[in-house]
Amino acid sequence: MSKKSVVIWNGNVRDAALSILLAVDKSQAYSNLLLNETIKRHKIEAKDRALLTEITYGTLQHKMTLDYYLEPFIRGSIDHWVRWLLRLSLYQIHYLTRIPPHAAVNEAVEIAKRRGHKGIASTVNGVLRSVLRQGVTSTAAIENPIERLAIETSHPHWLVQRFVDNYGMEVASDMLHENNRPPVQTVRVNTLKATVEEAIASLQAEGLTAKQSDILPECLHITDGQPARTKAFQEGLITIQDESSMLPANVLQPSPGMRVLDMCAAPGGKTTHLAAIMQNEGSILATDLHPHKLDLIDQNIERLGIEIVETAPIDGRKAPVFLQQESFDAVLVDAPCSGLGVMRRKPDIKYTKREEDLANLQKIQIDLLDAATKVLKIGGKLVYSTCTVDKKENEGTVEAFLAQHPEIEAIELQSLPKELAEKQANGMLQVFPQDFGSDGFFVAAFRKKGGSN
Ligand SMILES: C[S@@+](CC[C@H](N)C(=O)[O-])C[C@H]1O[C@@H](n2cnc3c(N)ncnc32)[C@H](O)[C@@H]1O
Image (cartoon, rainbow, N blue to C red; front, side, top):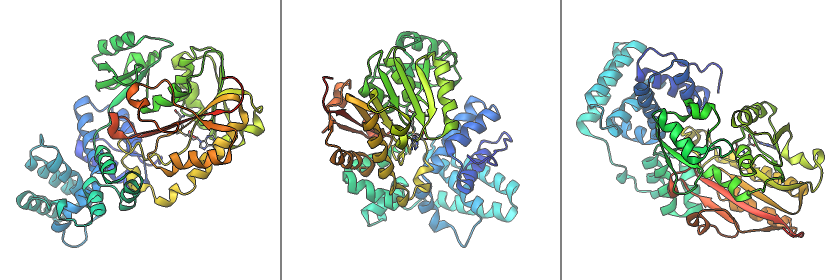
């Protein structure tokens, strides 16, 4: 996030939402980071916090749809900030039924007066009142099905085309619509410090609603409140983690006493999960390319009471230079990826990501897997995971990697609940956001041939 992106709080939720949206657009600040930073810095109270989050994310999530609705009502050019003000006001009018439309218009006019002048306020008033009178044009009028889906779900054309090419119209459409729904808030119980029941009781004592997931037993769904602000979090009974990102450690399933390498480890969500599965016995080397990110792992292991993790700044592609060959029982490569599975949490990704950004990722992913095979013991297990739903980075990377490594075989993914175990094919599992409300995620498992494991 740019250091200049500080949002001033004057007690007006729409004003703050507008400032965040402008900063995200102009300085490529991450919406989730800037929103959280604003809430924390100004100690914004629960009611305002909820509305600020909803308007900021909702406007970003539906940006292209809102532009399509606004287009017929805008004459000539308008300032950039005025367009964002119109978007966030129309978002409230069209999507938030509990806000009376006239209240949203009045708020917009007041902001336009404060930030601009009477003329701009009158334009804003005119556009929004015309929309209210005439209604918006249905997206059904768009003939090209890819373009219609792009506008309807507010994703760029190239991304819609790519998802449709990857998975067909139905799956792509479900996924694109799901990306516009708020994410389920989940935490993982740190089984080194608490049972599921103890963690639930601790969260409930602080007024949160926590329910054990039907998919993974260590996962809790939180419907009320902010788990990161609880005692349960501070004392290390829980950690914030999306449910599908709990899959890789479960699939790797290292036994207590093993020596494990987590090659792309920061901020340590999966490292700490591996340590819990290993019952704090054995050793985990958690490496990451970026040295400053290792501090985040250190903070997490400290809070969660983990004693078996060491961290080191290592480019995973060079692991065989720094680490002993065939010295790890198990390796996790939670690779850098396009992140197309987490667009519900970071809607700005939809508009900032370019198709050409995806071009070089497969090479890095294969290089990391190459390096992992060299430091993996014979008979050892390797897990590859990403938080993307892109076929090239997932199945494509796995196929290219296996073609170059006759000593590696794909193996069945174990320790999965039945509904997920049934979805795997050829040692790979693609989870879509619409499957069970988690992020989109991919996991594949391999074994180095030979040995008795
Ligand atoms: C998906 S994130 C990892 C998330 C982490 N495993 C967790 O569960 O918290 C990918 C990580 O790979 C790191 N990375 C990128 N290129 C790398 C490389 N060549 N070697 C090692 N780490 C790399 C990034 O810094 C980033 O922290």
